[in-house]
Length: 152
Ligand SMILES: CC(C)(COP(=O)(O)OP(=O)(O)OC[C@H]1O[C@@H](n2cnc3c(N)ncnc32)[C@H](O)[C@@H]1OP(=O)(O)O)[C@@H](O)C(=O)NCCC(=O)NCCS
Image (cartoon, rainbow, N blue to C red; front, side, top):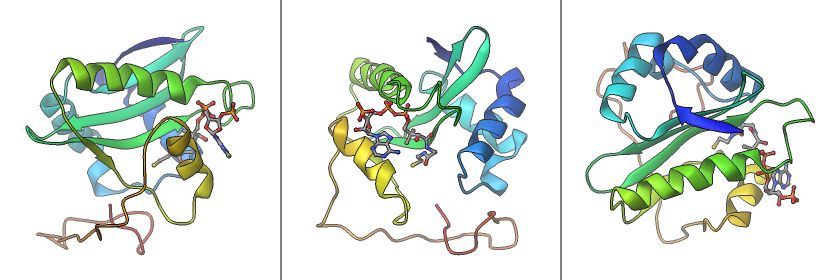
């Protein structure tokens, strides 16, 4: 798999991968929002291609103190899932975080996806039992997602 940084022309293919992965999508995932994200995180937003087909995506981010991982997805075709591609793109992201001196990285996993937790645990992530996530929405008119129960 060829891994490279996301570019604007990937948007529709990337969005389709997220839909195929049943990720919660919304106002933070419009073309404009994703462009803003890319400008802030040019080195950490990665895609993976096989035979010129985009089959992997992960949005890495760094806020100057902590790293974050959002919207990891591998194309659901059985010829792509469970072949190590998510591990591969996460390894590349891990390498980039290390190179940029990022000391700790967080991510959010929906509670109803034990297989996703299994994946992350397999590649060395651990569940925090000492923290509870809290959120705040500065502009509830502007913000919306495909699920009302999940607002990450
Ligand atoms: C989770 C996901 C990214 C894993 O991608 P993948 O390329 O199939 O993962 P890998 O092949 O690198 O898996 C590595 C290991 O993780 C674990 N794993 C991966 N998928 C799993 C599953 N569905 N059930 C149980 N364990 C799983 C296994 O231990 C696997 O090793 P093995 O295949 O040798 O047993 C993929 O299933 C996906 O895109 N899911 C939908 C989108 C999503 O939920 N993203 C997460 C957002 S937080």
